[in-house]
Length: 172
Image: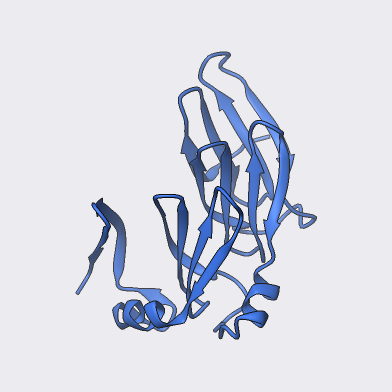
């Protein structure tokens, strides 16, 4: 089987990745030089881009959905999965979505938060990695959306965090 890593991240010992077309999390051990299929991330075993980005934060691997519907959080220590049910969150918070896929197009880590900037979801979602609570901000999205055309962002993933400020490189 050939695995084309679409989304990946690293820690001190492993390269974590999700192959294009599969909803599975893999890791490559830089020590043993072996690939391990860690877990199945969703029931949808095959789709084009199930997750578009993954981040390794503290004891977690965070999987940002592309074609999938939920943010998946893998606890590296306990080897367990949990999910943020985005459909439920968006309904409760009355968040508009342009499409039902590719909700986010930029994800950054800021202090104890993972910050998801909306693509087809018209919000910025803050997820606290320490306590599992989230905040949905539609006002910040309105500022952020000035740098978009439709669901396409006019910025790159180049970011810098200096003190309490987040700087994002823009195409405009």
